[in-house]
Length: 135
Image (cartoon, rainbow, N blue to C red; front, side, top):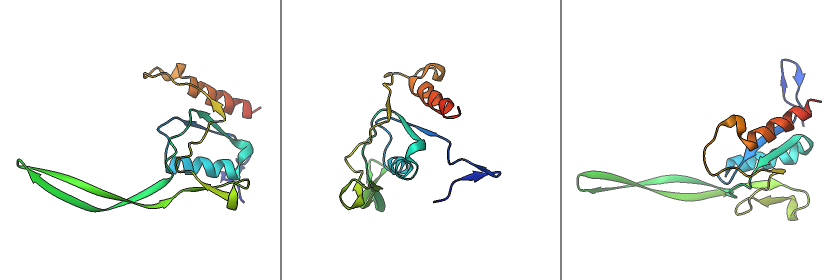
């Protein structure tokens, strides 16, 4: 497997810190799983467990209902596939991430309210992890 190169510099040894919480879902979880599978020594997940949504949908049908002079659109969403993560220890060498939230490498509890990012514990932890990787 090759490594990303930008301007002739290899970033194969750079640590990638990813922030997660219960809203991290679907393709984001698939990306985290791929990063952990193919570059485990340089991937750090910081935050809270993810949502565990390992399906993707298609919404090919849209129904319209006119009531009181207003038009309401209803979509029918059909599950068309599942996200699987490479894992040599799992049966068949992979597992479905649906209903299997990913645990962070570094668990950090977030406050329930918005706050100044300079005091955000998840961002500080991710930044510290990144800075430590540079040494």
